[in-house]
Length: 494
Image (tube, rainbow, N blue to C red):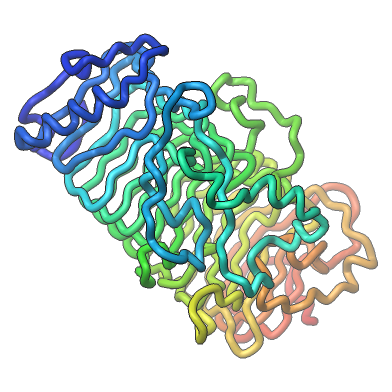
């Protein structure tokens, strides 16, 4: 059973005792919800789904209750167009201006909890989000200069509308597999999620979280941790070619900025193989682009939503496969500080192997300040097969440098191919743009490019590339307090 709270051992109730059929045809969410309510009234315990296929609309969790999916148990997300029902409506929360629809609501999900404590979902069973939608409107913030990646500039209004339908079209639809808001002492373990809608797992304003051994193969985000504290994500395997695999955010979804702190991501594998091919073991590589027209995503990221800031985060012993690299981004006024990323392995990198960006999109109420980034340690990282256009990028702003970055025992191998014209480029500042490595275009250096950095320590940085490349290995612009040790390519200043 789940290694959750002691309350979960008080009693156990089989959902079939409340009328669940598990036949893949009967809508079983009513029986499952009745079982959860009964166990909660009895002081807490575990609700068990034995082997079977449970067709469901919204399942509502309760404090003190664990949901256990036994071997062979599948919760299938019902389809409103086919199954004569609907998901719970998105809660009325007024104008949500500064984050997209998917991050602003939780009740419109397959499994949701709001304001709960001591809850758990686990077991060797599966969630199949067949009836969920990947869609959802973007934010209603109208500055628009940094709302979407610059790679989407050529998309037609019709193409964007297909990805971001009107809010009214979302009523009755479910667009998340698991969504928890303001929940405390949460355990998620062992599950497989095949298709999770817009977000497979969304936790917002939650604390004391343990996520372990989840397997997710989904069409958009895998695990989103927004405004959370004291959390661990361990031994997860997440494939999300069209969006981020594990992403830590600090948005205004709770109505105020909430700082993220004390997070550990350890021993996880993230990737951007064709959707579904991680679960079936074929690891397909036919699709070359995500919907934003950059390469497959599937990475670990801090940001983009960054109003409340991030502190004391450890990312270690993780592997990236056919994905964009590690990204740390603060562009909405928050501070990123005391982040350690160590013992990472990246293979077939579709963007920069590491991307640090301090920008000023400023999404939020008037007066959002420029944020800050400081105290970043990048240690023992090996990346191979890197897209030649994008080196390791450290990009601050004029007057607002990234401070105190350590790059130690890092080995980067690129595909090569930069030209003399590439070497002559001086990327624009683009302070207000959505942060992605591609925002700057092909970079003028192939190994490391840093601009507006105060305090850069480089120790045993190894750089290599295939074929020919006309660019310098390292280019620095407005970088102060530099120390470099055992790094052969050093420096070219521009």
